[in-house]
Amino acid sequence: MKGEWGKVFQLFWSFFKIGPVTFGGGYAMIPLIEKEVVHKKHWVKSEDLTDVFAIAGTIPGAIAVNAATFIGHRIAGIKGAVAATLGTLLPTFMIVLVLCGVLSSFQNNPYVESAFFGIRAATVALIVYAGIKIARTSLWDKATFTLAATMIVAMLMFHWHPIFVIFLGAFLGIFIVKIKEKLGILVKFEKNEDEEIENNEESLKQQVGM
Image (cartoon, rainbow, N blue to C red):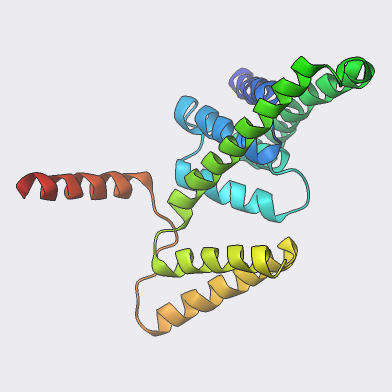
């Protein structure tokens, strides 16, 4: 029991540390969540975390909070889900309460405006980084790459609603897999880091041999 509650506290503290230092919302938190739960704590594999973010992004609510809840439940059940969720929400909630009282006094300060100018740019970099990390374990063949590219074009040019894009992507994913199975094509549902390392090593060997 002591070990179980210790893990619950670790979940709370890990996500409590992530919240206050992240600007830009849920997607900007993805790199920090990955660093904490995959590389530091080794609670979740990188390819499994991609699935968590995919599910968290397709259901109502902030992706960071949803992801924290999923990860917490996976590690320590209901207690872990509650601890991770509270850890994500509490620090930012307290910061917002403080800012509400003092924002009006310094919102036109040139130094503050300059700081937010840089923060917004850095936030874009964080979101792009998160997108690249997810793409590395989600787009591993022509079908998934084409599907992602098509959805991006549809949203940019035709302004399709995100909910419609999500359900359409799910439908097309099922359709593509069924077609591949009927054609006898091997269907892979994830690309893990070990395979990626092996491929890189093989490519390096070929280059050295040349």
